[in-house]
Length: 305
Image 1 (cartoon, rainbow, N blue to C red):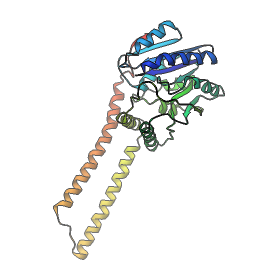
Image 2 (image 1 turned 90 degrees about the horizontal axis):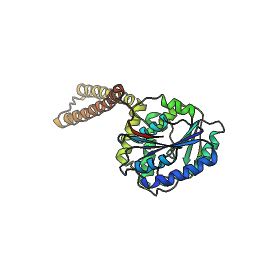
Image 3 (image 1 turned 60 degrees about the vertical axis):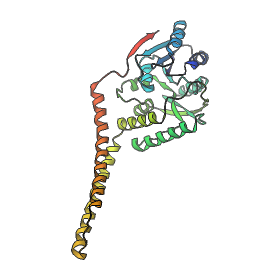
Image 4 (image 1 turned 90 degrees about the vertical axis):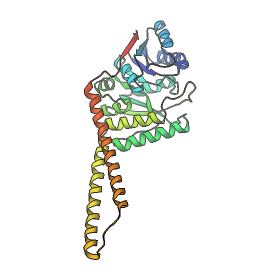
């Protein structure tokens, strides 16, 4: 098997038929053996009917139905676990990533690259989607101390070495691009065309983007804990110098601080900081709890081919 194309499906029922036709036409032009893997992430539009019909008529199509909605990156994980190609191409099902661009990715990979990302130079997204995406990656860059280009998404081609390495990573919190960064190997990127969204709408609202950012940061970085330590030391040093200053002022000038307000404001401030610190620590403990339960990353309800 030369190429496996993996597409997580949630929403966009109308685009699946067109996606299949365009992917098939492109793959038949660039290689002799291929497979298309549709992973139905419990799509509310009952996309399984369309996917299963396509799979029954074309043995090159694998259809995987998850038992419930696990999330995009878990659906990608399911596709990766069941792909057999020398190269794997990951792309969304909404046709914003153009299937015709797979030829450029494949040719670049044949030059000896293990990872070729498609860089969407002109993203055809709404202002809100572009803004939240930039904010997400900037926050991720700061807390994980890595570089992230908001024009790069999951769309790209990955060699068997990369796929096998990613399969070895069993983190419960999944972010496919971060996992690819972790395993390393020879990477590059090329410009690809990005289309406007015709079918459906993005399921990533601000709340989900925020949850994904927190999840990714806590799962891949301990920088928040280090910032807490630094902040605690700064507050302690500031308190020490203020205390020394008050003692000196009292014995030198007879100055003393009176009043209930300043005391209560300081107490509420420090208690707020402490509860925030405990909350961050709680997030890390929660991640440890999720990991040690060792539950499966996803559960398959049905498979075809």
